[in-house]
Image (cartoon, rainbow, N blue to C red; front, side, top):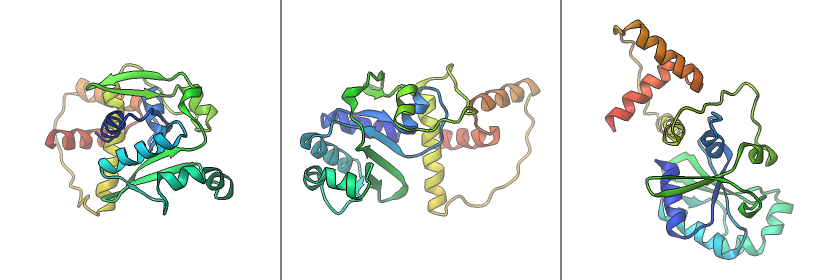
Length: 213
């Protein structure tokens, strides 16, 4: 899973990171569909170097013409003159997959939540902090509480996988199929999909893909 791979790399390179953006929103149960991974780190040269090495280790490329040293030493100019809010890394094999290092906030000013998944510590901002940082959360976005963090992260992973196939024009043709499903099972499936804000047909496709991998 992409978020876990990124978090594990950060952990191995001793990056002091906190997830913000859509990842944090989803872990709070707010179902925002955005494949980009946004992170806060302390704005120090040491942390800039570590985050650059960590992301390169898992296959992401710096989209800037300068590296960690130059960016840090000219950070004020980048933020003021170029209005740069994030340092962007991109997966060259999947352009829709990006990691954004936010440059307008630092983790030490927040008291984030923390969970552990597969021995990887994930720290993420609370919903009120995300709003303070400018994340727009429409009032009609569903919020869920009775699902696991793994499930919430898998939703975003399914979106990344779909966008990757779409980018590579590998979705192929669709085929209509018919099958009999007990009515109570179908109703329960539809109700859960509605709560999660996911069309039930989309969730069926996601389950099929997950079973094959």
